Image 1 (cartoon, rainbow over the protein chains, first blue to last red):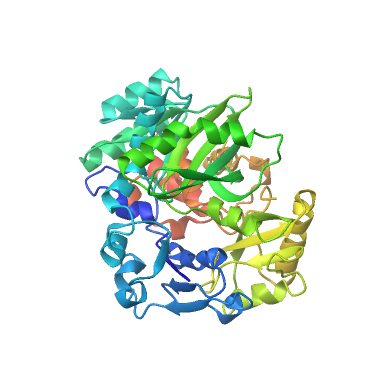
Image 2 (image 1 turned 120 degrees about the vertical axis):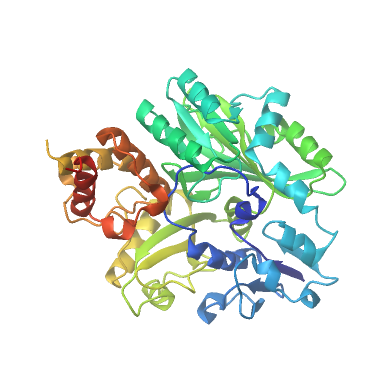
Length: 394
Length: 84
């Protein structure tokens, strides 16, 4: 029996408070707090899942897991509100190790300071340089250095926050006017600048490699995931075709990364984001996620059957009074837990007007994905839950 | 070209999904209809600053009042018009 819980905006809690932020709009996304429902996809029978909010019982149907939600969650990670007796002496698998996770669980997890360090893009970029891998960027520590770095790249530049908090993770700077605006926003804050500047390369595909790094420094390669993105936003992932990349070669090429993570004192799940360029070059390390991830979740779901599991996000406009029950009813006859073709709804207990995001696992043969996506969109549309911005999603 | 036409051109470029400026309706809701997410929104705003040579005060922006192209264009027009 494993106890599963977690905080999906882990980067918020790893990020040093004195760092200047890239321009952003809106506050934190409240829906992120309810994303821990997705951990249900990792659960084996009899596992204990602890979530921040109560889950809709229909989402738990057929999973044979024990579920609890914390009482009266306040601000901060869910780990602050979990009864220590529930995790004492148990095997635990948190989404990520935050300072609050360390306080709750203790020394059976790597120290949160180490986890924060190896999740920083500054750390992974230094490692890329040290290992001589392609695709290294440049860390800038002042607005002046930012201007120089972007100008030297002739405005083919991506600027990334070292902790990539959702919604304020990166910007493309392609004109002098945008650079001036970013520079102005940074200067106004009068805080410490630490940003990674990378050249925007002609990308063909995004993918990620997943490992489980053991405490003794050995690692099991778990597999690859090909990501579907909309611009820079992650929409979903699935197992890539064998022709995309040689899995064994990629696993071996990350040997230095695994050694460095172990040497830094980390153990646990690792997802390495990478990309394949139009000319066939592989950029093997774009960033390192030393935590669980949506790619790892999809790999886990993929093992349920011979079908391919495709993770997919559906953004819905929701009328007052409607919610996840209506989504589940719309998919009546199309639902599956992986034992046959169909869809598994992974979250959505807090889905309400005016709308939100639902994560789905579609189990099907790879060639049938488009057909399944169209079928699901038609189903929610018919139920009066209109999908947002669907013109290019499938 | 009107301010609204220029806003639509910037938006079409940010959406980058084949939608043309001519296809964007003046009353269309940027979030509900075009699924503009937080990253696309900030990219759109930075490109608006560039296009109109404006300075936006990001922390003070009330985006809920600027969700249609028409509303947003009126907001840009107010900023772009020098105070008499």
